[in-house]
Length: 225
Image (cartoon, rainbow, N blue to C red):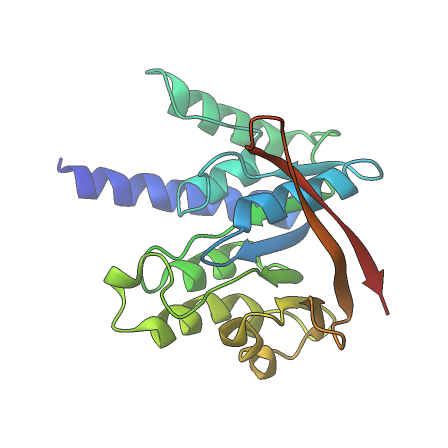
């Protein structure tokens, strides 16, 4: 059997197990996409929410059609070992039969758009109620797989197009490509950025450097409402 056939079988098994798991545990799903800042945004959201709720976020580059369902099924951070997949399938089946009391209330999922159709597939699978688009820009990453930058924006916009009416689309209003997607959703739109009319405004941004002149962090204030 050829590699692409095995990959398709694995992808379908993971999709089915992930859908069944979501249907049983009904976690709230936060989807994050963009050409930059996805991982830092994911970590920031996780840092805030983990203090109050049971939360899981996608690890590393688990942001595609394999990594996203793996995150739904368990707290995996890497794929390794000859028995990895049997263990995944066994654990997934077990928590479908018996209730896992530690299953997260909230899933924070990074969604990649390496090629056309990726976001549509992942959104159909995960059904987020909150979508965050960080930045796209005029020359986004992976543009080599798309006809133009507008096609990249349309693909990433699938995240907020499919949000429920009671959901939230959180958009970077400093990025004109991202902000141009605001009318593509029926969800409540929340803007963030440096602009004065942002719903969430960033103030007093300062970069911190160490004694050798290397960056070691940043600080800023947030004004909401």
